[in-house]
Length: 104
Image (cartoon, rainbow, N blue to C red; front, top):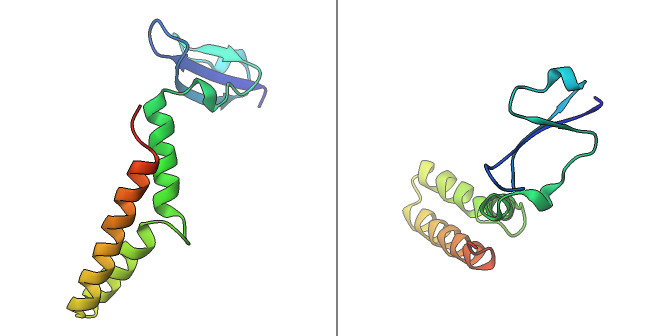
């Protein structure tokens, strides 16, 4: 890999797409070639928030997905009370994560 093909949102310097390429010849029409990774600082704010939320949801220790998995496991086992408890924890944690990572 010698660089990156990048695309920006029309009229802005906000990154809309980026992927590694071997040479300038591999860059599609309408895209630009850059040697160095453009970084996440150029992402749309909503993309950065979505990434932060998804990482937080999936955190094995503090994320909401762990409770959702537990809820689904309890539901499959026929344990209604445990299912409802774990589901409530999952939804509560998901709401907390959204508050910690608000939309811009």
